Image (tube, rainbow, N blue to C red; front, side, top):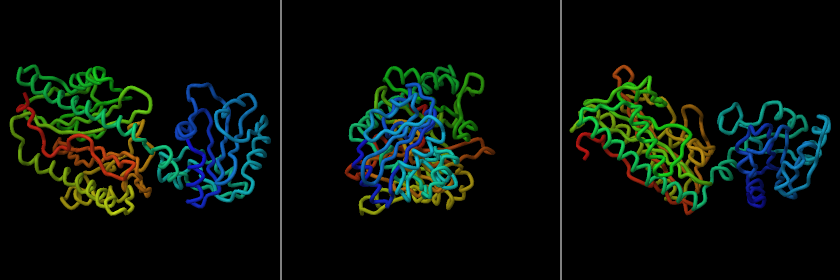
Length: 396
């Protein structure tokens, strides 16, 4: 974290400061930006104010006065609640507009970390509280070149996992030792361990109607047995085991047979066309040095699917920010679940993953790629991009 860089952006946005607040480690954004150890016991409220000019100020409870000692700035302590409020008022004296982890009308829930009561308290001092969403994109979701390299390296392993999973399905089906979705899920998790990949959950292995559920979780109880004629969706995400590593997240599709039925190929082609339209928009804007916003990328993908007559069957946003968590706090490709008006910035990573889900026909489709905007504003996709559904029984 660079106080000078934050203050530069505060001035650019016309803000008097950025007020961080937390209680019981409820704000992971503050924890990451301020480099706070979340494993260390904490039970009292604290505030950290970075003004657009001048020295930061910190407010901590007297029995946890050490809480922000690793950060620069003048320390204030409190014990009774009245002292908290009076000290906070003093710290914010002269400020008229400050950013907090707040999103008007909860428009971007990833940013809405500060409770309404705390926002009310700050506003009672005559201060306008605005969203820190743009600041969060810059200082929480921005990736270093080393972090981008970790994403690319994870991608190499993830494509191996995907390829080996499809081959395992082919091997088992040819031997008539038909695997379940859950068995392939476990097979992929074993590969995660072999390649030193980690993930909080997943992967998704879904066939037929299970693929109509974008967040299907295979278990030993709910899984289907795979057989010839099944449409297979693999959605896998993981990162290298280590510090400051970045997730890689892809979805690929296969068909258990030697040739893919034309109807399935035609629907999948709509999905890939939507994916490619969104990627093309991002590339065109960055090549011309023009801004592109999250909602616009969603619009570009959604229009292709809607024009093909499947608009009501694309039931989630086009993509999400990716960082140390698979769903990060930066700009999302979304004009459905939210309207993300944040700009896509250099040094960021996000997915593009349109889908068409047809429960009545018991088939679902999705194609997912990860897009990296390098710190030189290059638009890069690390790894292969799927063009056609894989005929799994042609794999050796």
